[in-house]
Image (cartoon, rainbow, N blue to C red; front, side, top):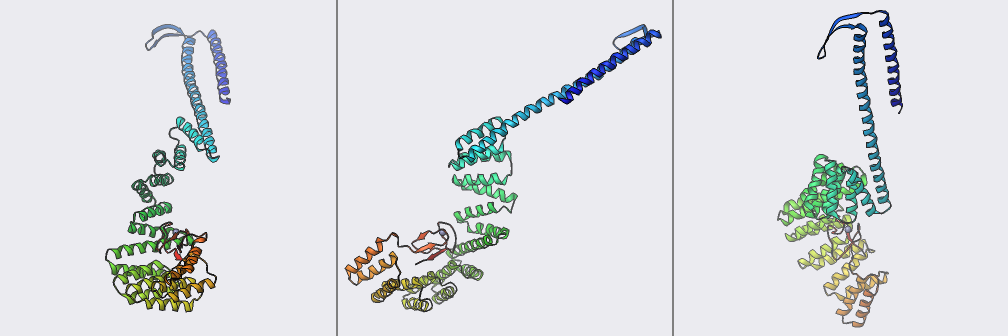
Length: 442
Ligand SMILES: [Zn+2]
């Protein structure tokens, strides 16, 4: 506004100067009558006896007209630019307002209305990346993975190389079951930024799901070296051990037993509490019928961990070559050291039952009940003893006790991480995917 006003004054002042100057010239000319003999103007011909004042005024007038023209053009250009900017500002303001409104709707828990608002933004500004991303997020949250991938891909085309958008896209693909697509996107992120922990961890998980243990192991080494937080680092190291354990298991299955044994011993050296490595090592020795090695590993492992799972394994080995006394001895020895470990009483009782040593089994189970132990499996096992001894009434009572409680299941293997209950021991919980988390609980 100010500059336009100043521009107006400029024209008025120029006009006043111009008029005063002409008046002055005419006045001077009337006092001095000077004639130009002849004057030749290009394209306009030759003129004779022209008064000097006419020549002067004509030259001046043309000069001033040119200056005036230039000023006018400049002013018109500036005004046009201002008009364009105002239009753009208005457009931008509308988009910003619509986008803010859409975000409010989203925060207020109205995804459908938010999607409409984001689409309005896109109708005015098809290259609005944030709206494309938000629409992808809404589709993702409603389970429409394919459309989520469509929006996130479009956003990525507008913001090439954005790791955040690529992470979202990889999740869309993963949920849509397009695992190769997800792997490809995560690999692209890692190629451009090898320290993106989220991408590394997600790609590792995908390789784990696909059973590509070698690739997962390689990535996990990078994850461990990049993790700074102390407690998180120790968790990542456990995962690294878990992956090494899977590599060893694969080698054992491919008849590369010496390599597998070496890796498993390495794992135990790194973490003497990693039970799955002991069990896998025992499995290999058992397959090779090297029973004394197998027992040695179990005894060493039990000494370090006091895990009943290891003694259960010892029982399996001893029964596999008809030496049950070895297991009985091991349980009794462990019970001398840890008489309050009721899982040992239970396992020994169950072994007695298996060996038809019914009185010993009964004694064990009844001792546990006397000591206040109360769970379905205990009554279930005692019921089996009574049944074998043909004490049908007592057996019936125990079966009733076994199944009357709220806790219907008999499974006692539990994942310490996710709480999943399993019928048998596993090195890796297939619910939460972690290793060395499953234990026996009484
Ligand atoms: Zn679990």
